[in-house]
Length: 257
Image (cartoon, rainbow, N blue to C red; front, side, top):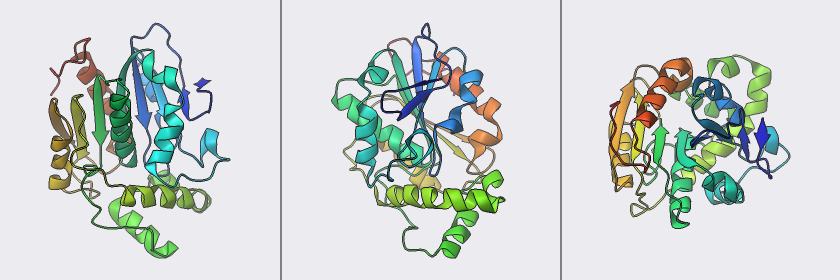
């Protein structure tokens, strides 16, 4: 395991010989460990994952007050973003962060080979529902309704007591953040969603199409909000196939979809 200097990024299995680096962004309430198993499931690339303030390696820091705070922290690690071919992936709240980071990297002259996002409305689409003013009981009811907490956590009162403040802090950022329709990346953009996920509507998902000047594809899986964890083997096999279809210069051709 290897940490970046400020511990905002972690690599569970460093692979110096790998040509490509996949950097993953967790969902609301999540940490880098959400992607620990991916390092074994994707052995041909070097898998890194982000940590947001207030959890895991950054547990001593206060929660971020904006996505800019998180991006600034991550961008301090210049070499991580420049040493290899780069792919960004984010799930739910992490999809927002992956896209925001792609924009900032692009402004610095670093173009990702691809940006992969799942289970979130497009970043320029406002939230239909917000969570910030809900009582704890109302908050949990909404989370249950949307399927937004893994069962292993939701069924454990101690774990819920620990994670609820983290999830609430992230969802407040997720609700408030609204990018401009003119915020567009040049990299190809690949969207994944699940048939029974209620977090975003079809139109909110398809609005991602407007976020890239490059290729766009949308694949629908079976399952609910955490479909990427319910079938991690199947989902990472899809990611592997997708990335193997990209040419070395990040062309937008894709043979897997």
